[in-house]
Length: 96
Image (cartoon, rainbow, N blue to C red; front, side, top):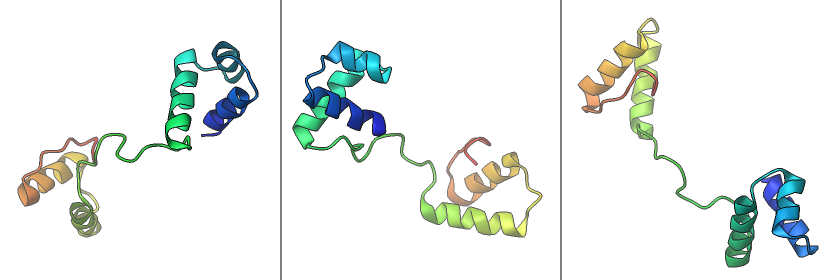
């Protein structure tokens, strides 16, 4: 986030895209994207809805926590199987 603010400040001071990229150690494309976002929205904050949506909703996570408290020795594989048995959602051990 600080990098984006620096990009906007340097742009306002008249630095070129290439100069800004060298100075903040990023690509010129990152500089252009940041400046475009700032000019369109007035902010450099992340947009809503970015990234992958969570695999498990909060109620499933709450149920999983209760299960883990009851069965603390369950492995990741055991927990993934439990989620499938309870909610019919396939998740990997790494998701847990």
